[in-house]
Length: 327
Image 1 (cartoon, helix red, strand yellow):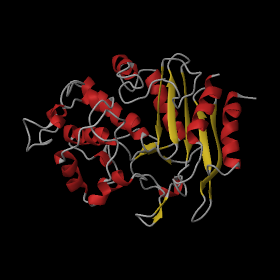
Image 2 (cartoon, one colour):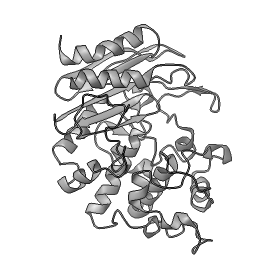
Image 3 (tube, one colour):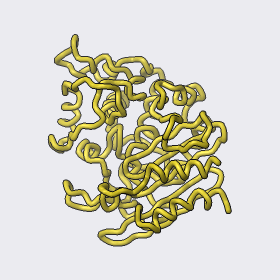
Image 4 (cartoon, one colour):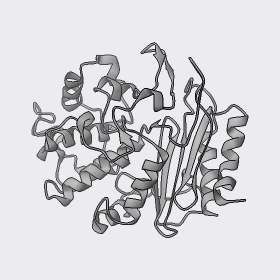
C-alpha cells in the first residue's frame, strides 16, 4: 500500500462513519487524494482534489506570519518593535498606561500577550472600520498568555497600515484567495447568525464582520497550493533561510513564530521530526512541514459542515494521519 493510501485510511473510515463529510489529503512526495462530499446541504456536491477550503486559522501562518516576516526582511519593522510603529493610534487615549502599546510583533506572532483567545466582535456590528477601531481602542482585560485570535487581528491591521492595502485586496499566490468562487469551495456551517450555509464566504464570524478577511482567518485555498507553499519554505524561496529559521525557533514550549512546534499531544502526531512546524484551522484544516524529512502534508476537511456542534474526532484523526505520513 502506498504512503498516501495508508495515511488516508483513517480519513476514509471517518468519512464512511459519517463523522466528517469529506476530506482531501496531500503529501508533498506522494500526491493528493480526495473522498466524500464538499457539501451535503442544501445540495450534495462531491469532494475533489481541486476543492477550495476555508483555511480558517491557517491564514495566521500561510498569509499573516509570512507577510510580517517579509516586512521584517524589507527593513520596514523588526520583530521586537512595538505594534505602535505601524499602528500609532493603538490605545491612543492611554499612551502612558495601556499595556497594548508595548506589545511587539514577536509577542503577537508567538501568542505571548495578555490578550484573550477570542472576542465576539461581530456582535458589536458589521462595519469593518468601526470594528477595527474598537479592537484598537478596547481596554483588554489582562490574562495569561493564550492562543489568541486578537493577536493576529492586530497583526492584520498592522499589515494593512504598512502596505496601504486592505487585507482582502492583498496579493496571494496562485491557489489562494480571499474571494474564492463559491462553486469550487467546500461548504462549512449552516450559520444561525447569517441564516445560510457558508460556502465561499469565510466561516469565522469576526473575519466576516471585519470585511471578509482578517489576520486570523479569511484565506481560502487548495491542497496543491498549500503543498506548493510548504515546498517554498522547505526550499527557502518564500522567505530567506534566516527568516525560516526564525519561524522554527522555539518562542515557548509549543510555538515558534506563528507556527506550532512538536510537543506532547500536538496535531502532527508523534513520529515527525523535532524540526517540524504545523498549524490547524477550526473548519477542519491543517498543514505540517517536516524539515528533516523534507516532507509536508495537508489534511483538509469540512468537519464543521453542516454544524460545528458534533463530535468529529478531528484531533485524533490529525494525529493518526501524521503518524502514518511520517512513520
